Length: 365
Length: 90
Image 1 (cartoon, rainbow over the protein chains, first blue to last red):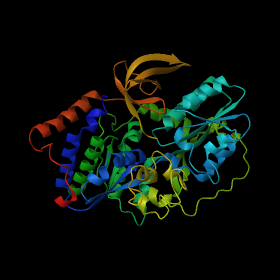
Image 2: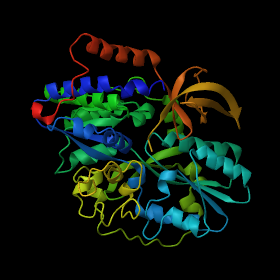
Image 3: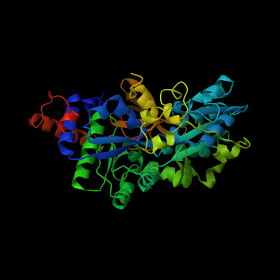
Image 4: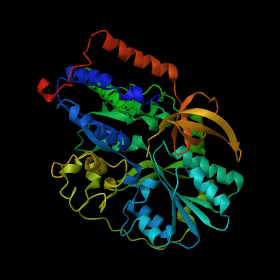
C-alpha cells in the first residue's frame, strides 16, 4: 500500500536506529503526545529497540482517555433515554463511567450505535426525524473539523433532531501544562502528525521558545516515528529549541486553513476538565452560542450527575508521563481490558491498553 | 482516534450539498467528505480521518525524503544487514 509500506521498511528502520544510537551522547526523555503513536511504538517494539539512553514517555493524546467522567456519565444518561439514538466512535463504547459503559446501556435496550464519521450520525437524523440523534463529539484538533462540519451541515439543512455532546480538547495547552509541572521530565516532544495536519505547527513555535524544548511533528509508521525521534535527539544534542517537521507529506506550517475556518466558525475555545489531570485553562472547544441549539448537554436534562472514579486508577499520572502503565499496582490485575478501572486501559490510544496488548508487563508474558 | 489512513481518491460525488468522494484504502473503498481538500482530483492520495479527507499527500515531498534515506543506505554509510543497535553500544 502506497504511503504505508515504504514507511515500514526494516532497512530504513535499522538505519535510523543506528543513527539515533550514534547521535545520542547522554540520556534524553522524549514524550510522544499522541496515543496512536504510543500504540505504534509498542506494536513495532520501538521502545525496546531504542538505546537505553532514550526514554519515551507517553502523553495525554488520547481523547477518549481524557474525556471527563461527568461527560461519560451524561452520555450514559442520554443514551438511556427513550427516543434517543446515541452515536459514538467505537472507542468510546467500552470506556467506564461511574458505574456503566455504553455497551451496558445498549444491552439494557438503549439504542447505541457505532459510527465512523459524524456525518453518519447526521444521516441517521435525516432518516429518523421522529428520533433524537446524538453524536458523542470527542476528539483533538484532528477530529474537531469533522464534528464542526456535521454541526454546520445540520444548521444548513435545518435538521432539528441532531445534537452533539462535546468533549473536544487541544494539544498545545496540554503541552504547556506538562512543561509547567514542577516534576516535569520531558525534554522534547514528538508532535501528533494528524493534529498538525489540521492546525499546522506554527503554534508550537512559542512553546519551543518559552520552555526551551524541541518539537518534531511526525507520523505513525515505524520509519516516521524513528525519523522523528532521530531529529528530536539531534535538536537536543545541539541545544536547539525549535520545531522541525518530519511529516512533510502530510504536515505543513500553516495546516489546513479550510478546516481551521470551519472549526472556528462552529466552536470557541473554553476551559476544559481532563479526566485524571484536572482543569486546563483554554484547552477545550465548545459550541459557539449561535450553534448552542445543537448542544446535547443543554437539550437533555439528565438531572444531577454524581461521579465516582475508581480510587485505584492512576491514569492521570500515566497521561502526564509521570507513571509507566506497568508500574501501576493494579495494571493487569484488578485493571484489565475486560474489567477496566480507567479509560486508558480500553481506548485504542490508551497507554495502559498498549502495554497490556503488547505484553510490556513481565508478569503477563 | 487521531489515526488517519492514506488512500487514493477514485471518484467524486456530491451529497446534500457536500463534496464527497470514494477513497481506495488498500483495496477497500471508503467514502470521505472532501470539503477540506476541495482541490483534490482522482488519482491523488489523501489521508482520511473520521470520514473526512484532511490533506492531499504531498507526493513530491514524500518521494524526496524517501530518496534521501535510500541514498544514505546505498552510500554504504550503513549496512542494512546489520543488527539493530543494542543498549550495549553505549
